[in-house]
Image (cartoon, rainbow, N blue to C red):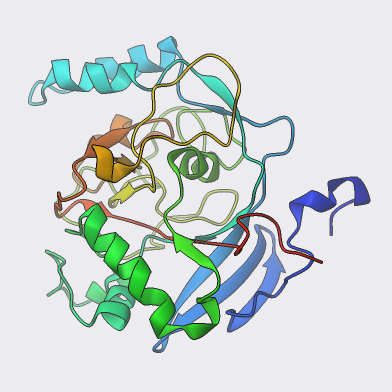
Length: 293
């Protein structure tokens, strides 16, 4: 699958992972399905970046274009400050791969694990296929703690949230543009400017097979916001969310398109939960790195 000099990209020692109910390889890459109480979540293998890394954040020209799109009804000063936190654009190297859910966590999966549903849109006919929302970072931690108890074969793995750098890397899927599909918003690619969430997978995935990375729900990350620097960074992480605020990415159903760009950043207190906050989880190897041979 990979040339010998790129063997570091593949989970060669542990594919399929022992928690997988099904697995395979398609045009997007490796996938493995995690099934909990009859609810399936597809996981995608996100490779390390390699020595070339990827470009994280936005430059001044992208921020200027986004600022023009801020509508009069929004707090322009507040959002200008958020735009400034997207820079400087800098190179990031991620040395470890991870399995990342191909959609935000659905209400169906949340109920299978937690036995309850906090979502504002839980009474909709297609609720099980919509993202769970109105969950705080602390709520998500409780879900991630309970998930291995419902699926014992992942007990020795690390179930968590992607770090902000990992999230943006996965969202971009090798792109270096405003959105994973290019510059300029496309109405048929993301759920924004709507009255409520929609079922996952209504729009096409990005080039790595990940759905709803733009819009639908803001997604909690595993770390808080870090201040960007121009220097190249290897495996960067922000402060712990419990020490201040937690990072959110991707925009939501009721946000404007510019808020759903790959580089867009938001943060909230870890105890905050709105109808627009959700998450997608990841599974890491026990040692945090590539599988052992």
